Amino acid sequence: MTPAPVGYLCPQCAAHGQRRARPVATGWKRSRSVLRLSATTTIIAVNVLVWLAILVTGGQTSKLTQLLSLTPLGTCIVASNPNAYVPGATAQMCAASPGFYWAPGVATGAFWQVLTSAFTHVDIFHIAFNMLALLFIGTQVERGIGRSLYLGAFGVSALTSALSVMLLTNPATQTLGASGAIFGLMGVLLVIVWKNHGDVRGVLIWLGINVAYTFLGGGSISWQGHIGGLVGGLLAGLVIVYAPRANRIRWQWTGFAALAVVAVIAMVARSVVLR
Image 1 (cartoon, rainbow, N blue to C red):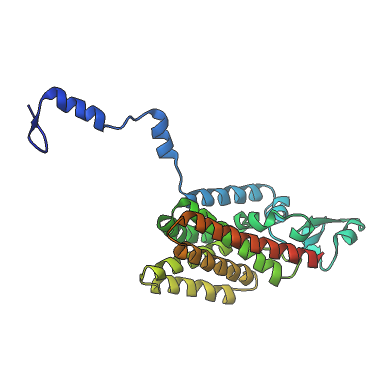
Image 2: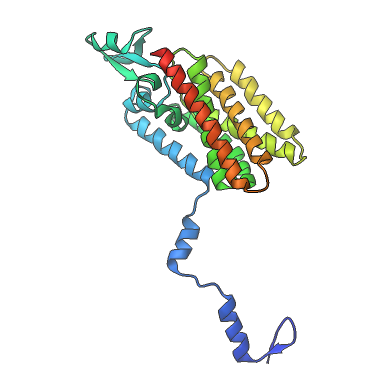
């Protein structure tokens, strides 16, 4: 007889129970479990791949940089020196001038930039700092709200960050980096910790340091994108924690969709004005 938690089992019964309790492990299922990546890891991987592609195609002068970065209107680039541009030039003026080419912006057709800019970096220190921040903050947020809501909050924050850039920056200014969406994740984390009566001091200190650096760190930092992402993250966090219990997931995604639609409509209106 084989000892069991309660009493004894015959050898045949014990073996049968073990066969029923043991999960069937196929090579396919094991490989899926091993290869499954978190949303944070996936976003970091995409950012690194885009950065490598930009690096090998010219860095700051790469056509990918101009294609993926967020420019509200567009820029007339000097063909012989891609780092130089003509302030105030329109697409028509640029096309009529030899030695120049037009890099389109959101208002002139490159609408994808409102999202791709959140995955675009040129400087190694820029991507290193952003990905380190995303690893620490994003991992905490993803564990708290799950993979799907995390991706939704990241997307909403990226859109509101782009909207703020569209509204508040020079139409020829090029903005890139994941920091706007990361500020949004900090906003989500702050709301969740506060709603669950946790200690918000750590989040507030981290957020305060980054806000201070945003305004004191130099003119190359897009305070517009950071503040816009933070506002979007705070709104997304409120949607997550205050969604009605009945059909909560549906209400949360409806709230995300509403925030995204409002941001897109506002960017379309801004694009019409810029054109």
